[in-house]
Length: 260
Length: 313
Image (cartoon, rainbow over all chains, first blue to last red; front, side, top):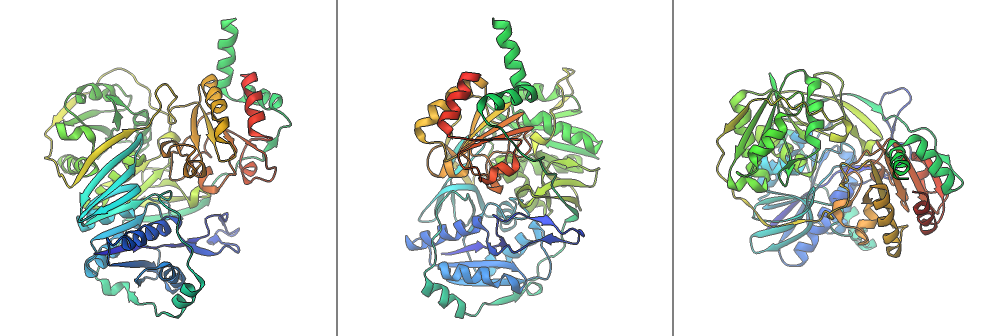
């Protein structure tokens, strides 16, 4: 059984992102590029399933230009058996990305896809459900726990009011919550070995999938900023400020007076 | 040219998000049809609630025993039939956990993209959504039909309930898909405590609040009528359940007042609370990042501050 893990290289999520002053693009500053933390836990989960004897191999795939090769080396260092760069020259919409991943899953005969539930940056939460629909596989979303027993995958899913325990037969797409595990740090020897490995590159055009996007970004702007923080010296001052400003607290006070 | 809106519900009541999504849909200036997918016993009561929301032109219901649990694949099977029936131009629902799965699964089946987490409609064709954990905002436009969108409900005021009922149309259900089985549903909401989505005041608790201080947090929440949320770190360390996690991949709230206690202020946490009308941070570290993104900051020990606040409310 082969597990597909899509990987996205992102800007360090701890770094603040703003637009360049001339509005021509994003100001990355000195921020590093890292593996999307949601994909990192998905890969870690795949590694654990393999270590438990439930999977034979793990394929980590990214779609992008050559600058995303380092993220595939990180995946190799963590323990992925196989990596693939689907080379594209432009940013993909979630639909086109899902179409490419679906084609890779078919060609590589994967039967489980573990997908980080959110690709940071675009923040859209869309790839796992789209991939499941395009492949016509079972969809299991927002896993906080995954178990695999023979051909059945069972997850504890995060929901709006608690948790669902869901089960489906393979093939399946499972989206993974970032709280599911603590990903491992590769050893120095693994990092060095990954540096020497050749990275297979497949031009997106050879995947023969429809690359027409059905969404276009018209404009990107900075989010409005909150005015500077007022540091208050004590609880009394804080409560005074809040009573003036927060309607819910004003109401409490009126009720209090009425009660007296 | 009309909008189909899927209504979410729980225990026989529409979720509070439905009226907000209806209000959001009004920006498209089309007829608004609300679809109820539910078990047989609750469908009519839900349809009545939906038909009373101002701006709703028609209510559609599909009910069957297997629809009581709202499995994604079953809901999407109903949606596909309804969307074809009336050639809807738009489909939208709240970007809850359920909404995120349903809209994107439907999109994959229909081979279209989605605008997710919309916080404002610039006009009928241009939609504003947060990206990069809310540091930036993108204006997007959709091609193809139908245009699928998920809406961040608390970015829109709820449409009023006017009580003039609109027509209710009952449609036949599609049979169960049955690929995914629900083995167990665990509801973790604490009875009697204010719901995060509806609360006017939310207390956010981080790892800076030790377990021994939780009774104080709960007392304060009760006195203020506040809901309790938690940071990811607090959830990971077992202090709080994941259903009350606040942040980018947890619950997104925008109460009148958010008080972050012992939370350092990662961008991903702020993404879930930054639209609150007023934000307070209480932290013993004067250099905590959270102080850069709040209205009022108080440097102090969580236990002492909580005790003093209890005396004030």
